[in-house]
Image 1 (tube, helix red, strand yellow):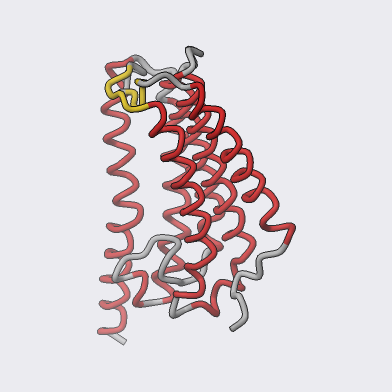
Image 2 (tube, helix red, strand yellow):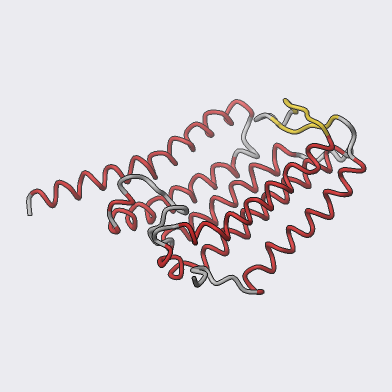
Length: 224
């Protein structure tokens, strides 16, 4: 069976380079991280969870490799696999930037564990915001499938609902990304309300909007 996303040296170079880089770093971190390191930070950028250094050295690289394999396998499993050819470029871009973000997070956690006091409360929200903006700009190009995009009962029931939801959802993702990046410079008292508003906007821009479009389409058909 032909691969619906057609991986090539060009499309897989960056993901495989990231995996090799992470695998090499995992050996270094495994041998050098202390027994106990910070593994999670709160809204204020303060550490609120700790874990084993050796466990952290191998956990995220294992997850990165697993996620890469899932990106390769999902199109084969999708009943709508023929659609992937229509947005294969976007699929490969999403694969690269998501893996890239995870690799950067891995290095941030590892370097902090080695004593480098990186501003996690600034770097991580900024990177996630940037990820949302990139995703938002490409979202309208995703064609109907079962694994990527805004998958609700209503978007999967209609090509038109899928397309309208992804066009609107893309704008909401860009807004959410800008808000996430803005959090890095907002006072602490603003961070949680802005985050809650961002989540609410994402939910409406995906699940809520797709349901509203579904109802409008249903009403339109009823009167035609």
